[in-house]
Length: 118
Image 1 (cartoon, helix red, strand yellow):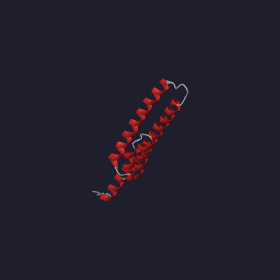
Image 2 (cartoon, rainbow, N blue to C red; image 1 turned 90 degrees about the horizontal axis):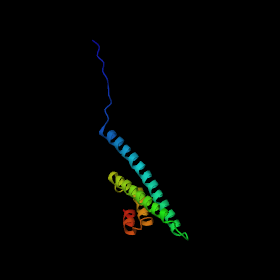
Image 3 (cartoon, helix red, strand yellow; image 1 turned 135 degrees about the horizontal axis):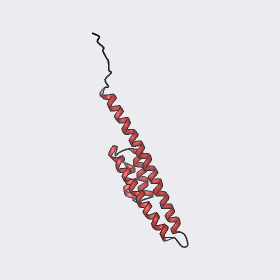
Image 4 (cartoon, rainbow, N blue to C red; image 1 turned 120 degrees about the horizontal axis):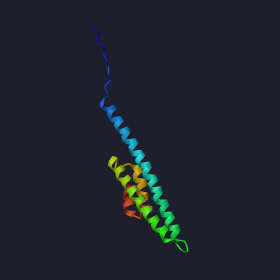
């Protein structure tokens, strides 16, 4: 009979926790990047909207389309923000980005300021 002994290095709780935190950080960073992109999209729709409004004869069809696109982009931003908060509601970089979005784009000065101050 031959006996083979296999030695497996068991991961310690610290090593398992560290890898979990690492994967959460990757998810968080990916969500933050997507949230920033969605904020940029919303901002661009806002700019396009106000440029169209400032025309001598604004095209109401274009304005309506921009309002719809901006609304959908805003929903996406809020969805991504909710996912970020579920992972870490006090992530400073995310609080700063979303807080400025609330102030500059959504005109929610108090809510934006509260987020930035956290």
